Image 1 (cartoon, rainbow over the protein chains, first blue to last red):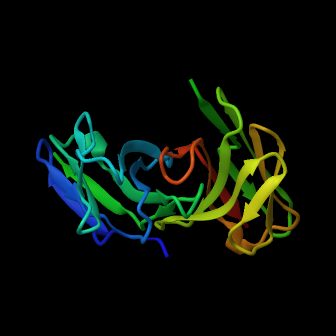
Image 2: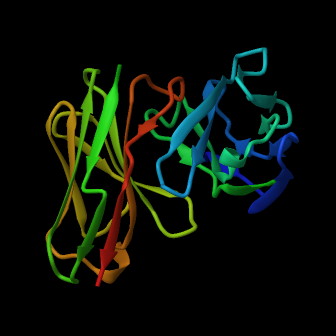
Amino acid sequence: AQKITQTQPGMFVQEKEAVTLDCTYDTSDQSYGLFWYKQPSSGEMIFLIYQGSYDEQNATEGRYSLNFQKARKSANLVISASQLGDSAMYFCAMGSENTGNQFYFGTGTSLTVIP
Amino acid sequence: SQTIHQWPATLVQPVGSPLSLECTVEGTSNPNLYWYRQAAGRGLQLLFYSIGIDQISSEVPQNLSASRPQDRQFILSSKKLLLSDSGFYLCAWSVGYGGNQPQHFGDGTRLSIL
């Protein structure tokens, strides 16, 4: 069975500092994808970054990078130079060859950026 | 570019009333479509997904139903709403298979049942 675990219900970071949001996953599939989404208080889910299971390099998108450790089954999101607008809920998600079109989402981490 | 429209943004309904939430996608053909529900402060629960017209899979038994009358239109309905149907409903689309492409979400509908 597929499972996504986010163990940090809430995180705080000082503005301009970097922060790491943890995500571990469980799957027996060889081919899968890992995704991070941001959900501001307004509610929309914004896609941030994607990592494929066969990608050898960690994904990066601007200030977002994904620290992919396949052997540990972890896919942590790193946000560099935090901004006040980064305050939001962050969700990790996974889709895989045996889940077809379905994604599994974690329970989310609430990030608060402190000025 | 692809866009997804979801409406209404907010809805207040009495218990026992019907429901119809609509979602349309533009700029892509034959997308996979999804309905999720998010309770306050919680994660996403997949309700329905569709890989084509009239092809709907239900993930959670409930008094909700979904229909896909056109390729890029996905409708969430209920004949009689329950208090437990309150929540934030999100529509999403994707292409691809097996986790190789992201899902893209609409802005959501906040549904309150009185």
